[in-house]
Image 1 (cartoon, one colour):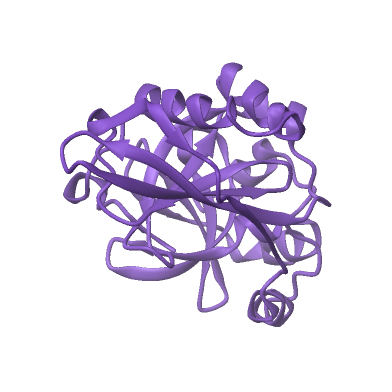
Image 2 (cartoon, helix red, strand yellow):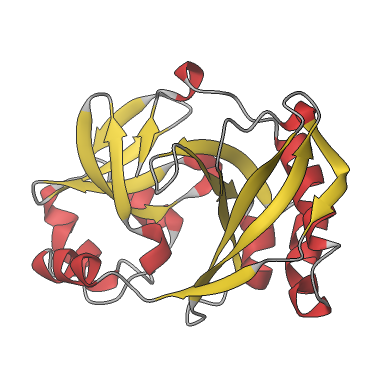
Length: 226
């Protein structure tokens, strides 16, 4: 769950520094994780956004569509790698990271304290005590989506968001950071560039419920209410 339209109130994360941190970590991990290094090197991450998670310092990501299409595997289980430690030059302590993976791609990062990338020494990364945790799909997510009449969806796309003070359910990422959301059974397209909540015409609700997973982005944008 992330606070949309409140990014400026949170610490801003530079994508290039974030990528550099991930590359430094992934280069130290066993070769079985090299596919994720390749994704980062190809520029899969478009933006980094603060999210509300198990840690107070959690960050989700949005993707460049032309890159994620090459790597996303929707049937792959979600998992995370914990216990990654990077020396923090400012505090002289180690910052602990957990990296999350979903549907075959990197999904986000959380840390045990404020993540100021410029303070981290990427030459001092400790992975001696890392653990891999597999995550089963939250049964509540299944129940919520079924209650909306949606049977086929990407679990990693579904989470609660805060949009201009309103709590909505994020359903699917679109291009340029836009996304499709639902509130009280109604559907909306959230435009990042316009900073607007655009209503979807109710005549398209059944189409969304039946085909959310398979609809093209052009279809979804065409559903915006005049």
